[in-house]
Image (cartoon, rainbow, N blue to C red; front, side, top):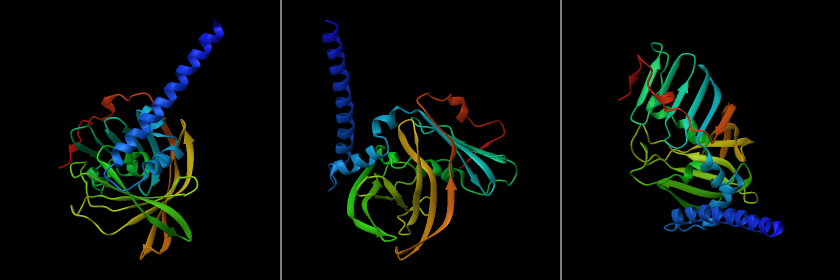
Length: 261
């Protein structure tokens, strides 16, 4: 009798795993039906980094990076996408309604509305392209620094985010399906499509909670999309990703801060 119960329990667990995987693949398939792309390609990219099922279990993400102005700590609620970026001289964030800035006078020279989630987007690749409103197109293989990569082009529907004209290209290893390069355009400041592409090499990865997350990114400049030269490196440390939801007060504007128009 005990053996029968054990077999039945194992059967239920196995079926549950199959069902979760089918839902994950169905989600990708629904997203790419209107595009000429094999859904399994995008699914395999997600799987190579730990899978959407594991990613969607997570509620919060934080990491630190070193910049010219010192150490920055980036914290993001993965469900609401509320976020904060904090250093010794400034703090900024998005509370769900608007972007705020708290700084020592003149200490922050960037654009908070652009920066509060910029590094998060790069860090959360490729999972960020599973967001609603993203669509994919498979392109011809591309050679970067004498290596051939598979290519997925990502765009967004017009009502998504503050910069729906932004575009991304994932260059993936054709054997492992692991993402190795990211190309992207920036339209936040112009408001229109931008033909100037920027490139990031995902130089190393680290496993956190069954997910493969970036450890080192290298920005490259390029001439005619042929000669790629590194010019900036960003290392990620004190990475924490959790299934525990963060307290919403973390993202509220501190007293004395201002909302950015």
